[in-house]
Length: 231
Image (cartoon, rainbow, N blue to C red; front, top):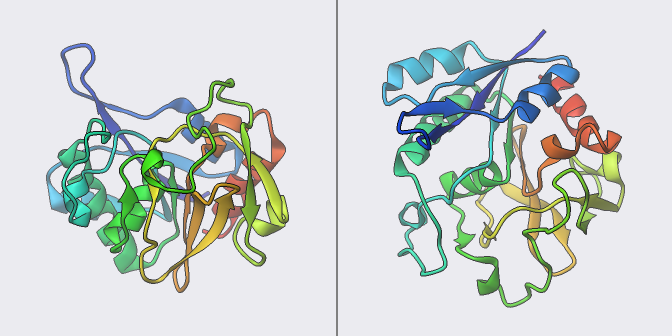
């Protein structure tokens, strides 16, 4: 079985710092036949390097906004809470995953961070994208779809969804300029980018949350099944 590292966020809601990963990420990986391993948010680069060297793949999870300074922008008034410590930590994880060319899957913030790390940029709020007309922070239950996506033929998602898929949506930011070396693989009807894929490296970013739907929609679990199988 393959070892898959999952990045985490800091939970300080109870006046103590703790690494936090929602169970549905690890549940999706286990169901796909992988073994999830939490990568603690640590400042020690050698620790991160040693951990990533033992992994067969990396999953970057959702969370707070990416700091706009990373993509050379000043924080917009609509930008929400950021955490530079997490940005630095996930940059190290991606650095060593990239060196080894192991598969990476980024979900929501994870998709955005992949794009930013490799030189792309973000809309600091979806309202700043002129074409945005869809509510990308759904009122529907988390495990239910709220809008459709148009999928690129031949992409990672195509043999799962075909030309059109139904996804959930919990993000107020999205990709603006796609990083060099990546291609768009899914967009919503209002032009918001819903997925990217590396051209020469097995790295995929998804703007929606398949882990929240994996028990309710077999196609969402198929995303993890396909990704784990390629490790």
